[in-house]
Length: 180
Image 1 (cartoon, rainbow, N blue to C red):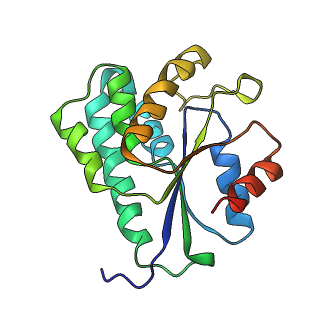
Image 2 (image 1 turned 180 degrees about the horizontal axis):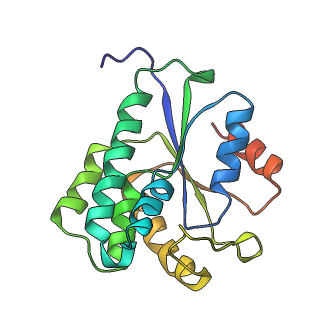
């Protein structure tokens, strides 16, 4: 795949139910190229077979990695608005999740070096918008526990990290777009 554009890769990162997908959906609506969260569909498929994340974290993480890797590589050759591509989570969050349950290993610690994003927006836990569904593996207390692992992995690996304030969707989108 040849690189046609110098697209800026922007990750919307953070724990579950922090508003990332709502922002991704709004960015799509106004014409931005966005890659959806890979884990939801993958977790749904595993849950249908009776295999949840906690019982099968490495196999599920491998599937998520395949999808995020494909999205990452695809982002380098597409033409898009303002040469900006948004990702609903980055590869680094797989390792963060595995660290949080003490299942990370040398492979997961090294894989993150292969993925370089230009800008990371981190969404903090927000209890008022938290919702639980079949494909969300964490309750709110677990969401709070994963958050420091996500912050740490991005702080350790990237210079440009911006925390997104807890605002209405339109205001959050404006906040992000103003900082590109």
